[in-house]
Image (cartoon, helix red, strand yellow):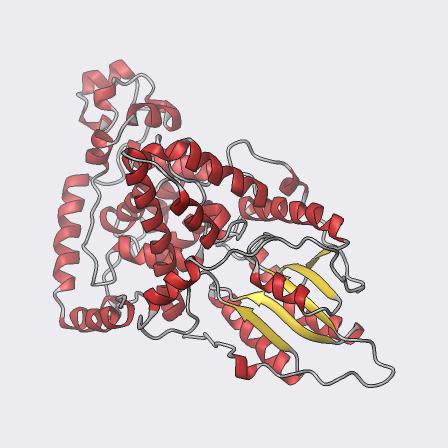
Amino acid sequence: MEFRHRLATSDLIPLSKPKRGMQAPINILWFKRDLRLSDHLPLTQAIAARKPLLLLYIFEPELLNDPHYSMRHWRFVWQSLEELRRKLTPLNARLHIVEAEPLSLLQKIHQQQPIANLFSYEEIGLQCTFERDIRIKRWCEQQRIAWRESPSGAVIRGAKDRQGWQRNWDKQIRRALLPPPKGPINSADVALPEFSPPEAWLKASSASQYGGEEAAHACLESFLQQRGERYYRHISSPLLSRKSCSRLSPYLAWGNLSLAQAYQSAKQHRGSGDWERSMRAFRSRLHWHCHFIQKFESETSMQFAAINAGFAEFPWRDDERVTQDLERWQQGLTGVPLVDACMRALNATGYINFRMRAMLVSFLCHYLRIDWRLGAEHLAAQFLDFEPGIHYPQLQMQAGVTGIHTLRIYNPVKQAKEQQQIETFIRRWVPELHELPAEALPAPWSLTPLERQMFDTQTSYPEPVVELESAARTARDLFWGWRERETVQRDAKRILARHVMN
């Protein structure tokens, strides 16, 4: 189920001159997950081509209805688009925002005015966007339209192994950054129906980050100048990470900021002690960002099946309580305070730090033994920074179905005792436990019956959905035992050969 097709330079078909009487051809710049004007290679190339240029963003019905996406994503996108429109006005340019199926829209535009070139970034998206791009590529070839796609970050389209990958990453991440357009843009005059957003998209949420290039650079600046000094110290804390982590992931996911901009800004940062260690840790995670997206690019079936074929028959639960337990996990009602606090914080704000994301997946897959695929769409819809190429490789790694990574079964009680300022975090998101003493917050079920009556936890907060110690023991035996299977070990060798960097 791998649908990647790289459009090489040799595939670009020059458009012949229009026949007499025909309208002059135009170029199109198709914005996708690249909602910025600075350091934007397709935009720079499209302007340099000197043909009338149509700037286009398409709200696709298939994606608007896809369960991976939610209103918080589209609100963030709309905020980014409004800023783009505002910045383009002085350049005599207009961003056309349309709701349509992309191929049908391109066909209608081509009927109005012939398209010479289509410029965009390569998209490492869901299966539906892979298939959409195949249809558009085929149509472009039939119409002799050159679709000029630029690489996304340091990801190599269709790579079957990691030969030369590190060299390419170094080259892409250290390249000269492109300035935003300065002069007037030669805009194409094409009549298109304008999209009108739902009212809910227009209401900013104080609990969620605001979209746009300006917000992205402000976030980067505040991280490098103030918030980031204790990045490496606070990265695991669900409370402190909200300030000390970069919080750039939504801006990278939706392209308000390029990876090269973030990396080079961090590289230029001068500091010692905590600053030096934090910047080094931050840059390593930017490298990790592309590494995981490349995994998905190279093996797109990860959206639907375990990358390790040996886990195809893994005995996930299929009893009648699975739906109920899954809903309790989704709603933050498992009866395990740290798990519930993290899920509720994520549901409300669109953010939770990496360590706690891993713990949420571990609880679903190890303690509840529920198939990771059943939790994938809920998490995607909640993560404001949902990036398909990171989401699915990470889910599988944390679920323990790759056969190559260390199995990590996160103990939510132990995590609650170890993380900084966890009491404040749990009391904020699980107010039912506000009367409990701090020492009882990680595991309120350990209270005696008399203490439970005293603190009134019986009716306001549920009992744990599972007994943690026995569930962890069962999961440990099951997963480690499964890893010893010949089919798992055989496919693990294939995975390492394909995805280990050289």
